[in-house]
Image (cartoon, rainbow, N blue to C red; front, side):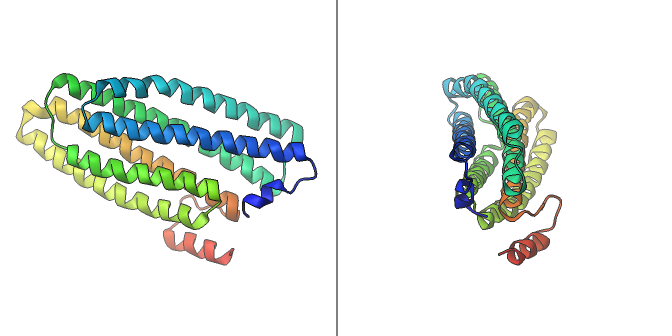
Length: 239
C-alpha cells in the first residue's frame, strides 16, 4: 500500500476527499510538532511569553481535531469505504486522537515552564528534559513523516525509539526522587520538572501509537501490543 493507491477511485471527488483529509491531518500534525518544540524551548529558555502562546494555540488544535472528525464522518456516511479505504479512515481517526493528546501534553509542559519561571531558579532535571525532549520531538517528526510518505519501516524505527525513551525516563525519575529526598526544599521545583518529563514520555507513547496506525494502514497488520521481533517479521512478510 502506498500513496498512489489513494488516487485509484473512479470518483475523482472521492479521491479529493481522501486527500483533503490526509492534508488536514498532516497540517494538524505540523502545528502539534511546533507546539512540542515551542513548549520545550519555553522551558529551557525560561520564556513565559512563548509558553503562554503554546497554551493559547492548544485551542486551535482542538478545533482542527473537530473539523477532521467531521470530515471522516461525512466520508463514512457518503462513501461507505471498504478494504484499504476503511483502513485509511480508521488509521487517521485513531491517530487524530493521539495528535490532540500530544497537543495537551505540550500545553502541560508550557504550564510547568511558566511555574518554573515564576520560581526563578533552575532546578535539577533540565539536562534530562532537554535530552528526552529532543528525542520525543524527533520521534513525532518521524512519525508524521512516515504518515506523509506511507513509510512503514520509518514507523517501525519510531516504535523502537520509544523503548529508549522509556528507559531514560525511568532513570531520570529515580535520580530526581533521590535529589528531593536529599533536599526537601527543592521538592516544589523538582516536581514541576517531573511533570514535564512525564508529559514528554507520554508524547513519545503517542508518537508510537501514530506509527502503529501507519503500519496498520500500509501493511494491514495490527502491531499493537506486539514484540519488535514479531513486528519485523510481519513487515518483512508483507513486502
